[in-house]
Length: 114
Length: 112
Image (cartoon, rainbow over all chains, first blue to last red; front, side, top):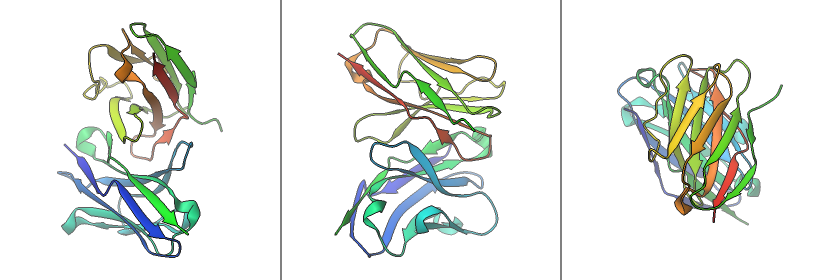
């Protein structure tokens, strides 16, 4: 069965600094990988996803993530943080053996300092 | 088009009462999920419906929790004999099988 580990429940960066949110997954077959974002008092929305093909995927608001099979990782990055990026970020994995059931990580709350 | 809707948006109930939470998925989405999000916690998977397959109930925390999906569309999550620890936001999401999930706004359940 698949699983997801997000390293760091809280990450704090300065405005303009690099954002790096870590996600490692466990899956017995090639997975589908997702990052979702939840802004304060709002619902979850998709940031980006990897299914097949190019391993570097770009999402909304300047975020991107790279699927690294050898490291079983799908870390989320953004070159320059904005105050508006402060939110909770969830990594998720699904696989065909689970009927594409999606499992979410515990989430990482990103704080952006002025 | 219409997104995922949930009702009620807020529910306050007394300990020991039963509650029903409703989810209307996006039309045509065959997959439907229920999650629970407690204060400061991540998304706890509860149950997964996919087409006509038997639902994956592996995340339901106790036999007080049940869910059904009628006609492959609307879903109802029922919590019997509610306890204070059931207080949380209950989220529903739907998707095409291999695609991303679309989340509803959630139902905030408070058990007093």
